[in-house]
Amino acid sequence: MLGLSRFCAPRSLILAATLGLIACGGGQSGDPTGTSGSGAGGVSGPSGSGAGTTGSGAGTTGSGAAGSGGYTPTGELADDFDGTGPLIGYTTNNESALPEVGRVDGRYRANLVDNANDVTLHYHDAQGRLDAKLVSFPFDVVARNIGIGTQGDSQSAPPPTNNPYVFAGIQVHVPELATPSSSHVVVGHRGDVHFTVEGKNTLDGNSSVNDAGANILPAGRADIRIVGNADHTLTVYWQEPNPSPGSIADDWNLYNGDGNLPGPAPSYPDVVYIGLITYAFGYNGIPFVGTCDAIEGG
Image (cartoon, helix red, strand yellow):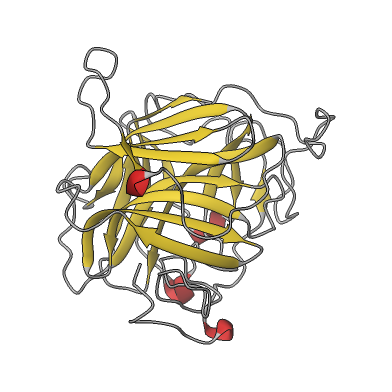
């Protein structure tokens, strides 16, 4: 995502950008903006279950606990994406924005081949595809070896030719999936800031974005950790991918030194959606794939 000095389009033109323009006049650096896509298909229930109502704008409902807004956690978030096939047990928001998502050879894999009207974007009011599960605070979630790759080799980062905006990462979202309030941490190319980690808060359709600096992840991949604290705030960490989690100790870096994402954060209830996103701004760098080896915790 670009800094404010490069972009600050009128609010009407920023509908669909999620790559880091600062919300105009908001004082945060941010993505360039675009035009939101055609409404991406609503919410489908947990994959493989046949539950949920597409296009309803609602999440998975249940009796819930006090303060949860009637949303019931769907269980352990941990997933090793074993085998090949559709994702299992996820609720999907805006599936049509990015149709080619599933398990491929033991990894989450999203194949992004089209970004017409910035339909995949997560920025301001624009919400691309999210595959997520309901999780209760407090939580500690790690995405292993998550990042961007080429279609021929998902573990080889595409070159940053023409300064693309291409990302894969984790998003925390309020339980009302139709409401554009979320926090995310993604890995990829952010315009002329290549091989970086980007952090973003979006509150009621207004995004604040920054990054952790250029060339900190030369492989275009990372382990990303988001801790949901008891007070419902988030603390974010990253590291280069640990080749042997459990055998080799993790060596986490606090995002930008304090673990905080930029700008005002949503006031999260007891239960939130946490899941995976892959998206782009514009057409440079397309096609590409976003992959993740595993999710731990929840």
